[in-house]
Amino acid sequence: MPITRRHFGLAGAAAAAALALPRAAFADDAVTIGYSGPLSGGAALYGKRCLTGIQMAADEINAAGGISVGGKSLKLTVKGYDDRYSPAEAALNAKRLHQQDGAAVVFVPHSGGIFAVQAFNQQEGFLLAAYSSVPSITERGNTLTLRIPPAYDNYVEPFVGYEMKRFGKKLAMAGGDHEYAKLWAKAIGPAWEKAGGTIVASNPMSYNKDTDFYSGVSKVLAAGPEVMFIGGASEPTGLVIKQARELGFKGGFVIMDQAKLDEIARVTGGLDALDGAIGVLPVSYDESAPAQSFVKRYKATHQDAPSSEAELNYIALYIVAEAMKKAGTTTDAKAIRTACDATAKALTPEQNPGNVTGIGPHGGLISNAYAGAVENGKIVQVPLSGATH
Image 1 (cartoon, rainbow, N blue to C red):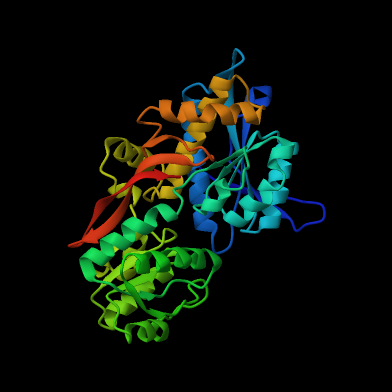
Image 2: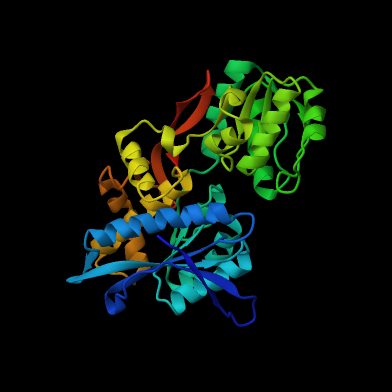
């Protein structure tokens, strides 16, 4: 479906670009679903993938007749604004979406924007659908927040155990130097040592700026690691792996969830270079029937394979839409949020390709999730038992 851009002037701030997806005019019979995320700049692909999942769910719901609330059949209209990964612009966009566009729920896919919106969404009375794996998002006591992806600390113990068992106890810390990578490093390092391992080198690198990592990789490899902790966006992460292999590294990789194994493989020239790596399981490699059905439906209207961002935001909108039906309201965010646990548990397999099983006590989705590990040139599933989103 074609995408067009419109630009809206925001008083006291730089103009924010709005993503307007053509839809029939539903007038009073429409429910606005808000989105603020990066739709331009270096994180644009990530932001568009999140939005694509939301839009796919809305299209399916509308094709099935919309949602029935108060005796009326209502359609969903997705309205998205570009915040260029800026927390300040995310806050402005969220206010506009709620106050002017009437959105009872606003999706935001980055922690800075989420924290900025949490400063006022309870007072203003709208639900924040937060796509970020930072655990503190659901530890702040915001009762109108749903956190969508697994908290990254769910990955730490399984990742450490898998790599240590397969390769050994010597770890080199070679992740990114951006804030999210630092949070991961603070989790991985202590967990590695707690499990009996040693950290033989530490050299964070500028994944968001550099295009050549030979110097940094050489530095950590000189310490003789058996495993490397790495991660940023997929493309630079792939370059780190490629250059580590070229420098003779034969060990494994702990890859933070920002990078995706299938996307990394495009940079490394295939999965062989990733042998021994563990990271997020790509949706296309989830062997469950619901996931494969989702992949097939997604590919019917898109040229690429679906990402985990698309899949989880798709599920989240189904949870919220069903909660509106159950609560009998499209405007009372508290009632909608209260109904989300029951609707998450009642989703059909088609609506729930990621096997979400409910909402945790602090507002994070819960699922029977999997990580992905590369073994003999193939991505295999590794259980993350009862991962709390």
